Amino acid sequence: MMFFHLMFIEVPKKRDPNDKPQVKNYKQMFRLINAIMTRAPEYDPEHQGLLGFPINAILDWTMATTNGYAAYLNKTVNEQFKCVLKHWGDFLKSPQSCCVLNDEPNKGWFGEKAMQMMPGFAVKFKCDPSKPYYGFKSWDDFFTREFHDGIRPVAAPDDDQVVVNACESAPYKLERNVQLRDRFWIKSQNYSLQYMLGDLGAKYVKNFVGGTVYQAFLSAKNYHRWHSPVNGTISEFYVVHGTYYSEALSEGMDPAGPNKSQGYITEVATRAVIFIQADNKDIGLMCFMAVGMAEVSTCDVTVKKEQTVKKGDQLGMFHFGGSTHCLIFGPDVNIEFDFLGQTPNLNATNLPVNSLIATVAKK
Image 1 (cartoon, rainbow, N blue to C red):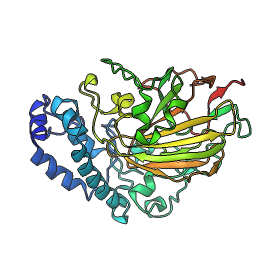
Image 2 (tube, helix red, strand yellow):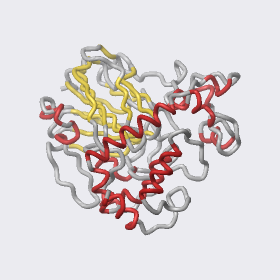
Image 3 (tube, rainbow, N blue to C red):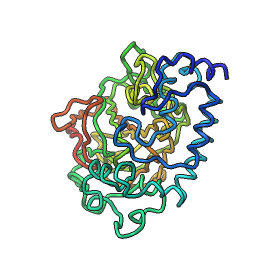
Image 4 (tube, rainbow, N blue to C red):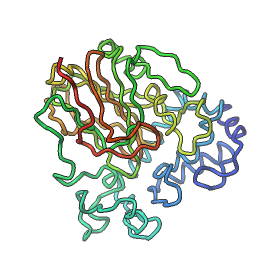
């Protein structure tokens, strides 16, 4: 409790990232979180950084304090956050959460402002605008919406040298020669495979030492299902239960935290790890990792061990907000990525799911 008392004292700002009065203490924090438990996120045209993240907005500035850093890494604290987020998640799956799926011009998810941000919504996604709430049964049903068939065709489905984009996502980082354990330098978030894959990945991790990690970001307002990047067989999968609101202290005050800490959270946040034995021997064993961010920590795996998957087949989904993911390849995989002229960074734009993301050279 001392960490929670001190972290609010450390916050220097008077307004939170959504320009509301900054929370003064942990008691006020509890009251606000309690009020959120029976409310679904409204659309907010003015504050896109934490869109759909009301709890994150309450805690954001404290995440960059030394006491907040200690608090949000604490195992007991994260066990309690897991309970809180499950309770809120149950509400977001209920019909009562549909109240924000309306056409109010500024705050409704089918209002003028939101539709400008999601052009062609009814053409792209499975829904029925003639029905209440476009036919969605809950906020979560809306959030995990599916594309209409044919909207995101799979690139080169029969060419095993082509790797497709596993998520509708923006390129964040590409790192080669990734180590088992690496040093964490100021303003540098190097990947350490041992911590990324966790204890359950111990028998697989050596396959990837010296290999390649590609990471990309999923915005809260986009599509949140994961798809297989290769043709192959599911070797193993598991969920690592970790943190929810921890961010890298080196990034300072991040108004959309933990966006700037996406490399760091691959080692500490709640995440789903799926190993796929690719049909293509030039790829061999690869790994897809879905990383929860803040409220988005329900990593829902929908495949089974030893299941055969084709490129574009669903692997699972996130619930309730924005998130990030990684593709991990071994050191002998000669893989070249195509970001359509972009350089991976925080300001990159989305590449379509199932589109060509990389090509693997024959050995």
